[in-house]
Image 1 (cartoon, rainbow, N blue to C red):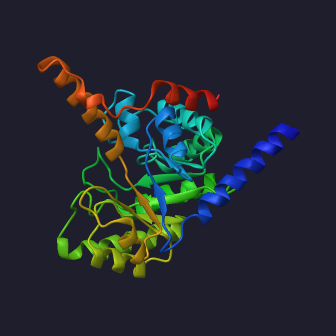
Image 2: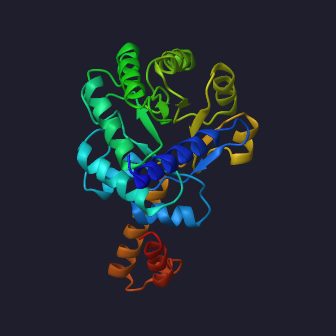
Length: 284
């Protein structure tokens, strides 16, 4: 291995360890999810200590709907661009792994590592399947394949459980089903558990108490603030696709304003052209 390769490997390992250590119960890692190199660079400049991608925002930006519709190669290329744009550790949302089987998930993980990311989200939603979620054993096998493919690295595997987000099953059984899935996924090699769709303090607190690994929740308008979630023991808080959604809402508002009133008020708080250009130049 050349000195350059060795230095790159060391840097990647250091970022991976920094990212892993940033998951602290009560002092959560805060992630404003990005969908391209520019949004990642802006987030880092605003103070983000780590950058996460949003699969929905990535897919939309590349002209595809969310939900396992984006091709692996496009997704991996985007991850590499985000990694190259920032100094902070990057964790990538890889949906359900961009693959039909565990072997394919392992191939995706190899691509994620080659792109330079230090973490992944992998979900148990099965968008084209007969049921909303993959069977527990099937998803555990996919996570185990990811863990095995990443074993030489410190890749942080965040197992996303979509019981609440997709309102699966009887509401009274949802918590126990989530904890059952979490136990299986952690046994398969997951380092953290992400349960989007949960913001109720009682449920969040029960999840924290029932997990042996850091809990990640999805936040946004209407959710408890960071201090409240931290007090419940949450270790990671993500904004998911909401920033991308807000950006596209601005596209709609400014376009409608232009076409109706002929004014430009929606653009009043835009980032300065020179500032944004300078941020991207610094990432060269």
